[in-house]
Image (tube, rainbow, N blue to C red):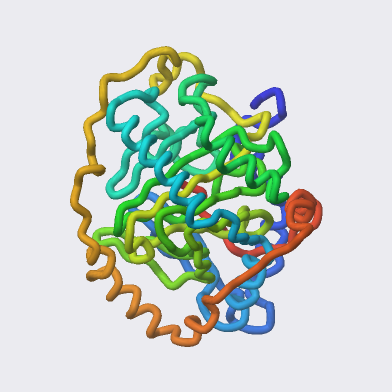
Length: 359
């Protein structure tokens, strides 16, 4: 990174999004006509503290419109095509349980497993130094290649439908959720992945939420800025404000049945990698012993996602009853790819500080 003039990736991230500082300075004194320019702090976990705009009135509606401007959705895969792809996902899960993948291909979490193909990276608790900009790609070859069926059944179809250009994808991640599973609020690392971020949903319908705040012990999730339904077989493309300037998450109550998502991305050519002598690095040719099943054979409780944590969120929703009217969303654009590519030159100002963390 020294060759590029940055000793700390946080400086590079700041230079990539200068509009954030401009907006912050503009509203720092709260003189935007009312008290809505003020900030309030909250703790998302014991280690992290972030500023967010007050959740009321027109600014929230404006932010929801900004989020929508960076989202494109299409229903592409038929039920028959979904069923064929879902069989392949089951094969991936079985191979993971049998220990047939390289160590860093499989990442397990309660009620959610991740499978990295093409490129994998460190995040969350795996990081020696936590915070935005600290994520690192593994060395080449430390995760398995993208399976042929992902190219044939998914990527080629998206290219033919004009969603992505040919040769764009070099990273594919499969997230496999059980009922009640979740993924906390995050932004896909700007210094790791180019935009857009493309995801395809399988097995069941769910929702992607923007601008939530997670709290733990017990887990609670605040009212989202936007709730985006994601249907089985649908493709969701994030760029611009939706990808860079607001967090997105999967809430526990939105996973009512098993759900899987294939996330297709392109890594930046200057994305940092772990040093070859890093303790997290291992020989790419080594195969680990079979991994113990931590979740696949567990009987999930379908009601687990609707217990006390939902009551906490209902309390917050009752404090903001007008927000429930702004959840519906649909957006499409024939020129979406070009608009996403030009976004860095024409990005709108934003006052929200977002958290980039595990995903």
